[in-house]
Length: 403
Ligand SMILES: Cc1cc2nc3c(=O)[nH]c(=O)nc-3n(C[C@H](O)[C@H](O)[C@H](O)COP(=O)(O)OP(=O)(O)OC[C@H]3O[C@@H](n4cnc5c(N)ncnc54)[C@H](O)[C@@H]3O)c2cc1C
Image (cartoon, rainbow, N blue to C red; front, side):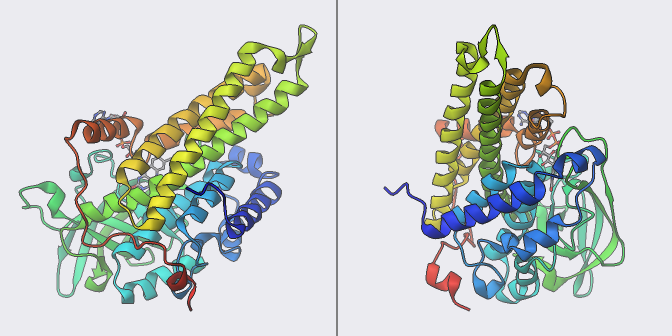
């Protein structure tokens, strides 16, 4: 077993750390207060190759592996969750779904510009009446002369107003005996007539990011834009979540690290009862828990990344990594506020933003309740994973790096 990162991994880690710490950290509070995404973020991430980090060069990517993707997410969320959310939706939920399920022609049309960052991608699964219960989706896509007519609304869609492409799941067969089998997936070009989008304001966290809604009224989606077969929409959505959850797990680990670093710094600086507060055992206990959570979060996400590299099914391991790291990041941010006392309660310090941001990840991409059900289901033998028609391709360095 090799725990060492490669030279390449360390290079990408340093590059992303430098971008996040130098270019984003100084401005993030201002944008969080304004509840607006800074305009330079997406073009700069594209320019640095971050948006295509783990895709083969022939598909517009940087040719790196899935571990590199995890490391990128950890570094980004150590500064702000909104940066990692971009990776979760653009890379994890959408582009990796295309890598797994799209035809070569679709990869050329959609994945290449996405991996290059020329087109921004989002993921439209949730509806106002269907979140955890995906089979409750009521958006419809009705086949009509070489195309589908898409109607419906998607809620809580990250990057809804920034994206050019959305991977949308809609109902193609309302008569399917099992409603899961009546869903299909489509790559919808958001400049198509009949598409409207808007932002959601007043969120608890990820305020420097973009979360919104998408509405489709008689949107004509060509048959060539259907991803996978008719009826495969649920399976495709779930495998996209295997990839999105991986990025969330890695990012939440970064947020734990940020809470730990801020707490250690403050514990040395702040004095009470004649000594620095780091000397008090109850402060130490909080810091020790953050160390423990960070190390556990990191091992869990790196194992999931390794499994992806090896082409092994990792739904169970990724769910565990996501559940653990997101709950632990919420606890770490809360403890970090406690360590900071009243100052932690103000936006003079970053830790209050960490807490607000951490809560979202406990909810999206499967709430912590859903992940507990999944883990119990696997342990009790109620749940097993069967092989898919298209699996996420294992990392093959030669194939990935060839032009
Ligand atoms: C900031 C943010 C960004 C998001 N981005 C996206 C995006 O880009 N694309 C997208 O498609 N969606 C996105 N979502 C939506 C997100 O995935 C859903 O909110 C999530 O799946 C939960 O669905 P829900 O909100 O409808 O809650 P519900 O499913 O209504 O759940 C409500 C409560 O009931 C619990 N519950 C539900 N079913 C069960 C059960 N069987 N057993 C036990 N408890 C249960 C839940 O755990 C939760 O506590 C985003 C959400 C947020 C907050």
